[in-house]
Image 1 (spheres, helix red, strand yellow):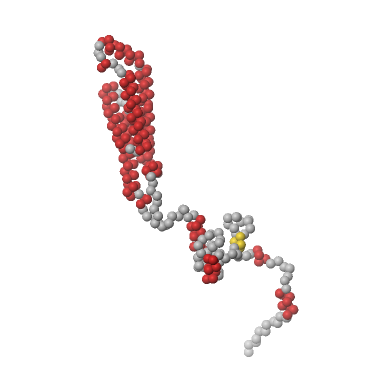
Image 2 (cartoon, helix red, strand yellow; image 1 turned 90 degrees about the vertical axis):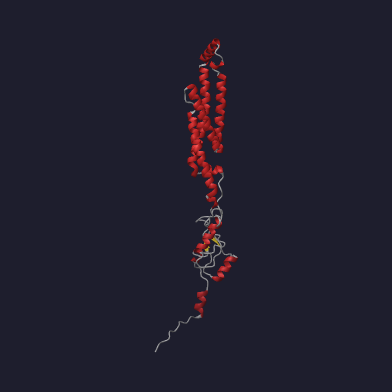
Length: 271
């Protein structure tokens, strides 16, 4: 036979004594799962209490009372969209990060911005052509200026000898064919140098193939004429620089055309 366990009887006096308030300290306030730290304020600030229930949170708590402030992030630090599932922590955190940085994550189907011609010229993908164009244009400009200075220096240095030759040719009646026209030489050199400087600036600013071809033709003709008349090479550095400019401008124009037709800005990007 099984004996029935008899519950101990509690008297009214003991029940009243147990329900009476005592002076002991309740430690439950030091561990309250409904409190959250203020992540923005720091660890040593007063924690924020989220006692107010938002509509999204109230709707969620009706479905699942155990998913209070974890998954939704409604009114919390994450500021994410409400997720009505017990595993909504990751969804709420990801939605909060999306709301914090809306500009860094473009939407699906957006296209990247097309680069301008100047931006494309300065981009790393065009480094070789950019260096060639800049260096060749600088060499052309420096060579043109240096040639003017050199011509003026030699004409000034040998001015006395030039005057003697001109006077002797005039006395012999040889005419202007055997006289040295210093002013004409200087004027021609200044005009040629100005033309070359303008072509160099056109290569540097406009990346023009026409300027590169024109400068190459002028320097080749000038080299041939000075070689036949004075038996010396002149402006060969400018001719080499224009040759590099021709190659660089053609390569840059081809790359720019390829970028316009099949650039990455025409591709659909999705995240």
